[in-house]
Image (tube, rainbow, N blue to C red; front, side):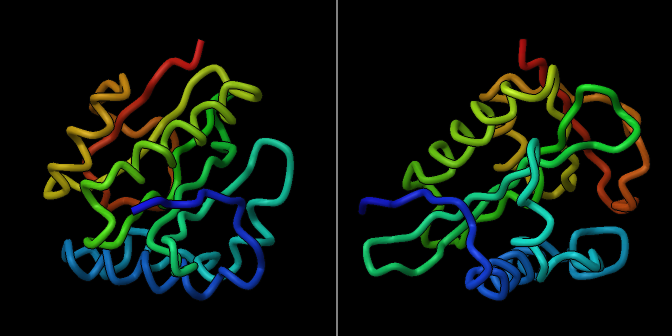
Length: 160
């Protein structure tokens, strides 16, 4: 299946929120301390519309959104962005669409930042392997307080 990657539009806000919430439920992360409780979850088109902040969605051939990824400024960490809210529906996993999303996000991030940080959960093993393929290295402590205190695995990658 061919996927189209494009920048998020306001009309996509609710759909990508549904995908993120479905994935969080799947991994038992539908609680405080994760993206589940993020007050900006349904406001992506407002949040990711400034220099250094962008969100992309992946659409299948029918136009259905099957996943997305964001790059956002990481407040309190100079020249560092955060890979944010990267989720794909189960039917899109293993199709290569996650690789396309990651490549676009990292290419964009290189224009503005020196490093990229992310937080995930210990039980998201496939995601961890995926991040490591892209050169993300696990770090013990949070870089800054993102509010996602339940995320117990952290990575950082140099973009230089």
